[in-house]
Length: 115
Image 1 (cartoon, one colour):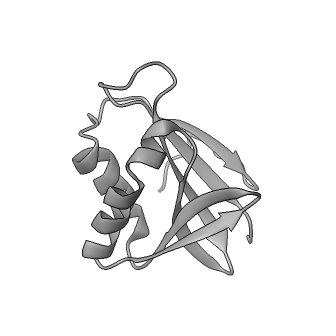
Image 2 (cartoon, rainbow, N blue to C red):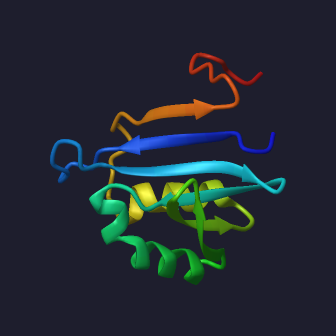
């Protein structure tokens, strides 16, 4: 549904306390996209590198503002793979790293399994 979102909070090994990164997936105008919200020092510092990476992989990138927060809105086929590339390749986060998630507009059951 429009406006639903999920925020993944990741703390890379080299991050100081409170200096993690966040990836937000949301639905805007019926399209699922990745929002690189410009809060937190790492998200701000890595803005241009993330935009370049996404564009080089064929995603559409545009800067937007919502609720007085600037963010990069990234859309395209396979948007979940971009998030994985950012986490795994750009930040070198181990698959064993715990990732916190905040949801808005839907309930997440981490114990659910697909049949």
